[in-house]
Structures are given as C-alpha cells and as structure tokens.
Image (cartoon, rainbow, N blue to C red; front, side):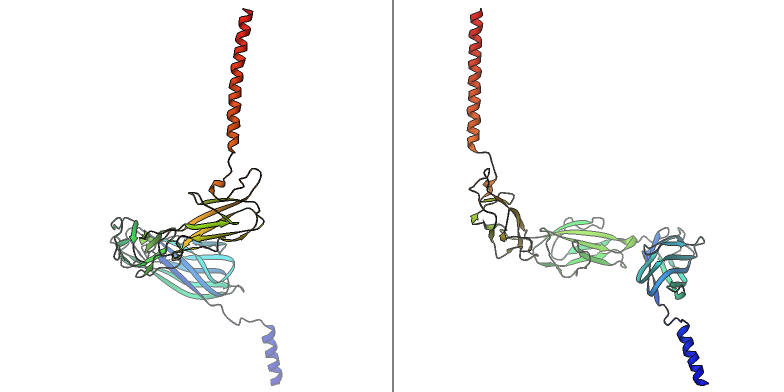
Length: 389
C-alpha cells in the first residue's frame, strides 16, 4: 500500500506542472538633479533587471505633498506605458524583455511653495508579470528629492592648469579656453561651485574614458588636443573646453625623396605628386623622410610598395610620438600611363599635361595670314571702286 502511494505521488509530480524557480528582479530609480529649488522639475529614470521574461510591470505610486507628478514616458522596450488618471500607479506593457532593461522616465515638479527639506517619491507593490502570466513581487522603493531654497551654484568655481596660464583668464561664465604647454603631461585643477557636483575630464575624441586630472598625457589630433570638463548633471550640469597645443621645436615633416617606377618625383605646393610611366603593369614606389628620428610613414594607408595600373596613392607622414605636438603631412601620388597626348619625360609635378609650344606658333602664323588677307581684300576693293568711278 505504501509503495502504491509513492507511485501515485511521483505520477502527480510528473503530470502536474509546477513553478520550480520564481522570477527574481530589481527596480531602480535615479532622479536628477538630486537637489532642486521650488518650482523646478525633476526627471527620474526607471530601470530594472529580471531573471525571466517580463511582459508587464506595474507599481503603485505616491509623492509627498509639494511634489507633483507631471507625466510618464515608457522606454522603447515597451509597446505602451501610462500613469493612471489619479497619478497613483504606473504600468508598462510589452512583448517580453529580460536581463537589464529600461522601464521609462517619470517627470516631477516641485511646487513653488515647497519647503526646504526632503520630499519622498514612493513606489509600492512593484510587480513583474512573467512569461507564465504570473505576478512576481519586487518589493517597494523610496526615492528622496532634496529641496533647497537658496540658489544652487552651477559650473566651476575655479579652473587652472598647473604651471601654465589659460587664455582668457578663468570666469565661471566663460566655457572655452586655449592653452600652450611645453611638456608631455599636465595637471588640471577644477573645483565645482557646488560641492555636491562631480567633475569629469575627457579627451573630446574619446568621451567614454575619463582622464586622470593629476596626470593627463598630451595626445594631439591634428596638432591640437581638446579637453572637455563636465561639471555635475541635470540642472547643475555645465561643460568647459580647453584647446591645448604643445610648443615644439622646428621640425621637418617632408619627404626627402620619392621614387616611382625608377623615376625621381617632385611634388607641388599642395603635396600633389604627378608621374607618367611608359608601363604601369607593375611598378614600385619608395620614399625617404627628411626627419626619420621624429617621423614615420603610416604603413596602414597604402604608401610605399608595389603597385599595378594607374592609381592615386596616399603617403602619410606622421609623428612617431603622438604627444609631440608635431603635425603630420599627406602626399598624393598620381600615377598615369604615357599616351600620345602625354609627356613621355614624366617624373615631376611638371608632368601635368599642357598644350605643346608648336600649337602657340601655329596660331600666331594663322593670325598673320588672316590680317594679310584682309589688307589685300581692302586694296582690291579700293581699285574696283576707282575703276567704276
């Protein structure tokens, strides 16, 4: 009998579906600015995570007196989203998402008569509806909004580069500066006017990786490094920029020699180098630098090597040290095959096709013939008139 009961129990476990593991998730809210004055607005970004697919999300919503809910926009992950008419609940509906996801953005406004202090925004009975259409409780969330009656300071209180002078002199309302340095590294001192603000420094070319303000390496982009100093976020956000150049000694970024298909080639003032070859089926390009200690030829962009057919070849001369402040140089080598209208001599910028000199002489002779013909015609006409008279 006992064995029969065990068999029945096992059978029931097999045939009756059960939920082995409940959904686990998080509900996060970040509001900016964290400190506001009466009458200002606050934007709250709502995000979540889930171990299972989530189709719907809902949460009861309440705000302290003096904090008004303006509206809610669902993130693109969801087909729709809303705040109920009484502003006491948010809901989003979608086709299912999991992992890390955005839920939406809630807009708030602090009343003009709000007192200084903390106003709480509360999310309760947060529920995620999973792939089995079952509700899963995520708990509650409270978000504090700090109200300050005094004017919030924005931007920087001071800005300097150790050992150097900014141009123009620093002013909190001036957001663009220039600087000339003579070292490979430098240090920036940036103090926010609001002690709660963060200060983050970037190379404008790469705004994903912050720089160490105490040890910034000069990296030139076209001879200049542009630094961005971001102060605070939201309502206290400001951005300052410094355009930095490095003092350099005289340098030579030119090519000392350029040979194409065995011909020595010279280039014009625009670094255009023209050459005509009798045979372009196979030829080599070689070049030497005037200053090989400080410069090199960029081998990732064509440059010297073996080529076939007519072509425009780019030769880039770049500084070996990107922090040197030296400017690079780009040459364009135009290779053409000689033809009946071409210049068989080739080998320099003078190879640009032009009309032969004999053409100019022929035009001169034809002009003299036409003038002579006109004079003869006039004399004949005069004689005929005299005859009939």
